[in-house]
Length: 187
Image (cartoon, rainbow, N blue to C red; front, side, top):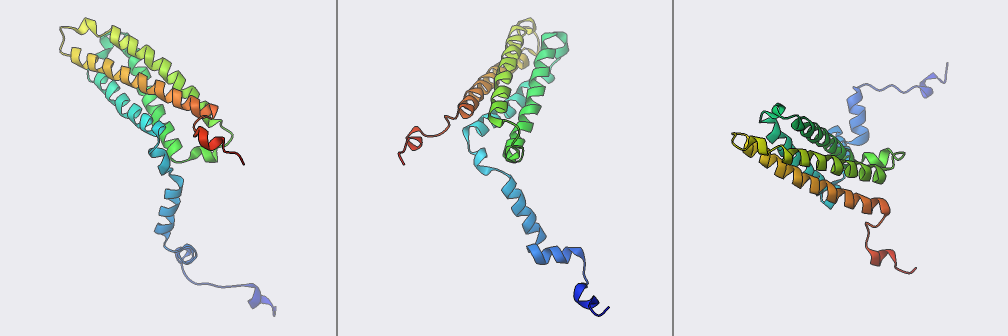
């Protein structure tokens, strides 16, 4: 019983004061954790700019179709499915890469996954563009002709953006993303 005081330490206070003593201000520690999780260099890269343009132009594309009576032509059901699905998936993929999830989930082959996604998205958006462009003519004398024509234009631009993203993700997968001069420096 004599060694009881040496084994036990008693502290009074709330658990918040203990963490603030160890890590400083808890909000400052939280902010530093958040900034280390976000890859700001990714936002300035060409693949990120392409993804942001895919998200923005894809939103315009499906919003133009959704604002018109797209159920009159069956082809617009496919166009809406492709546009909304790829918009959601691209937004999720953008935030996954932005938050550096690929560094925590190392078992996923990220370059191959992103390349496959962009390749499939290019093909799907190409089919949606063709269906959209082919279905604009029946609405020629209609109020919504401009909506469907603008949607066809934006779907063509998004198709090109996904194609360019597929090309850059292919280069990343193949490993040719760096400078050839720095990779051949003799040691």
